[in-house]
Length: 231
Image (cartoon, rainbow, N blue to C red; front, side):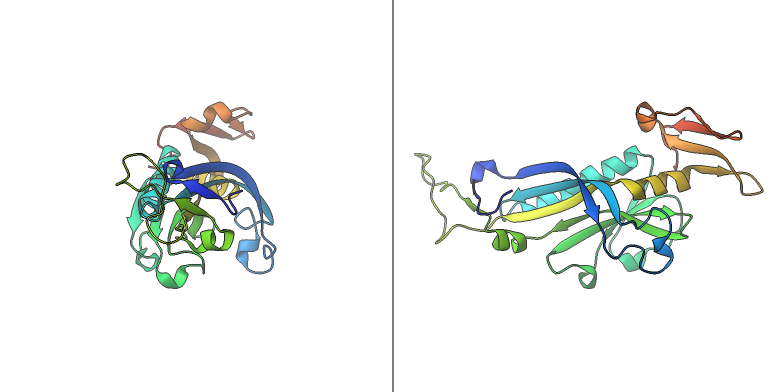
């Protein structure tokens, strides 16, 4: 979409959101993650993307993270911020924002946040979202640049601040990975009796207008709509 594009400085930051389909060729190859909805061959997700000036990308990364945490707190998941993945110790229905250590970064990412929810069925935390700041790694490959405005030029003419046009910075994040959100909502909202049978399901009230079925799940279970189902 933006390959070979030269943005005007006033056009940045450029924010995009889209719904797409992702494919995993390795899904189902081995291990417990092959079962259920956690790791599937094809899934739908809402993706967040931004192109910024070089000085804007760190601020934009925090903006994307705030959007993500607003989505998940809106679904009733209380969250906490963790500096690295190795500091997670508590186990409770929540989601955590992880500032990933360098050895966990992909080759394109300068910095990355992972967001994980506690999933009782797996007995572990599971990633439901992430945000990456790729600096100019992708922009150099796609030749995405921008033309800065010379602030000292009162006539408003466009000029380069240095020799050549600077490469933009790009960021991407997941707004909602649908299958994993379903897992987190169902497993944290399930109500069990003493025999560990499901007798009810608590779901966030913000989703009720999108619910097409009734409020019963079979002959014995019923859905309860709550403002903060997992708090």
